[in-house]
Image 1: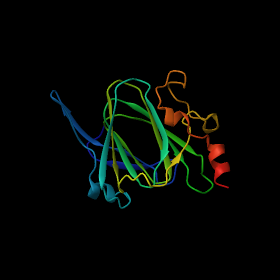
Image 2: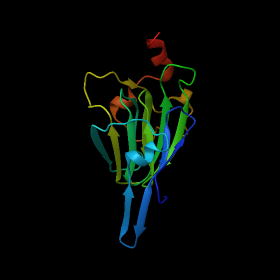
Image 3: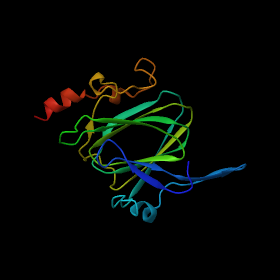
Image 4: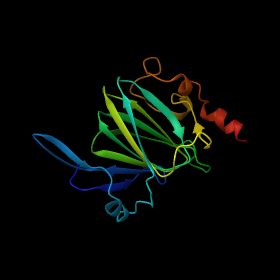
Length: 183
């Protein structure tokens, strides 16, 4: 946690890790989670926010994803801590590349469209927030893959036997199946 917003590059092109400005005292803390002008000075892309979503996760081990939507996302954890795994699912030589992070208040990620987003809760009562630059639509084109696909090599803190997942997320194809479907 720092005293100013700082954006840094990662191993995936366009994926940014942001250190948030967090100010605390005996009462608690205040965080500046997003400030367009300060981030733009550091090369942050144009990002017009049109929707904010919040996901509440009651238990440790809730695992969501991997979902790649047709919009960019800016994700923050407002309460708790998560293990985040981002997979580049865009066409190109880095397709299938994975980057992992631990997020809690004080850290954020900018995830470009076409990169799959997933996370696993490491504490109870996680509040996960994401800003997006397009409205949700059931007609949008989504790319979905299995979070525990062994070909991705993601070292999840909690394995598939103890992870809490939706039936839909469990049914997603593996990356190899997805690539086979797209040929």
